[in-house]
Image (cartoon, rainbow, N blue to C red; front, top):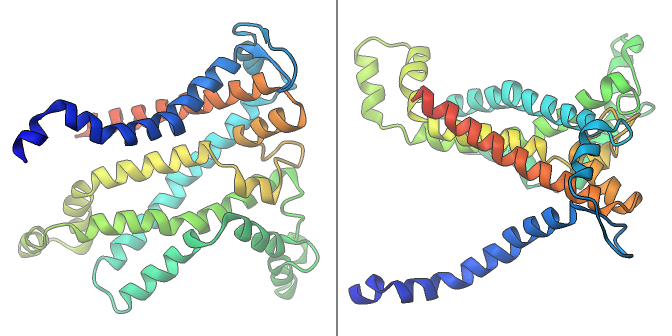
Length: 292
C-alpha cells in the first residue's frame, strides 16, 4: 500500500476524475467567458473581434450602468459585513454558552438557509405588499400610516428592503460557521481566563475571538463574494428596479445576455465578477494575515 501511495502515476490516476470535473465545471467556463468577452456577438450570428472594447464600454458607458450595479453590490457587501456578521457572531457566542434549548435555537436560525430563495422572495413580496402586506398593515395598526411605503417600488427604500430578507436568510448560515468555531475553543482556555478573573466579555474578546479568527475570515469572504454574486433574491423581488436602484452585476449580466442579446458584454461582466471575487478573497486573506 505504501508503494502504491508513493507512486506519483497512481496518485495522478486517482485524482484525474476530480481534476477533469473541476476543469469542466469551473475552468472551462471561465476561459470561454474570457474568450467571448473580446467579441461583439449576439449569440447566433458571426462574432466580430473587438479586443478590449467591451471592457472600455463597461466602465465608461452610462447606458450599461455597471458602476452603479457594482456600487449596489459593494453596499450590500458592507451591510453584510457590518450588520449580518456581527449579529451572527453575537448569536454564536450566546449559543456557545450551552444555554437551554441550544439545539432548538440552532435549528430555528438555520432553517431559512434550507428554504428555496425563490420561496423566500415570494414570502417577502407578500410582506412588502403596499396594500395587504404585513409591514404596512402593522404600521397602520399602530398609528404610523404616514410611514407606509411601496417598499420595493420606491427608489430610496428598494435596496434596503432587498437586504432585509438577505440578512434574514443567511444570518443563520454564518451563525452556524461561527458557532462551530466557538464550540471548538478548548475549555481549559476559558477556565484559565475565569481563574484570572476575566468576565464573559473579556473571555470572548481575548480568548474566543482570536481563536476563531480563521472562521471569521472565511465568513467575511463568503459575505462579500456572496453579495457580489447576489442574483436570485433580487431577481425575484425587484428584477433590478425601480430605475435600476437594486441593479447588481448578476442581474445586469442576465439582462445583457437574454434581453439585449449582447453575449460579448454579458461575458465581460462575468469575467469582471470573477476578478472581483478573487481579488476581494485575496485582499481579505492579506488583511487577516497582517493582523496575525
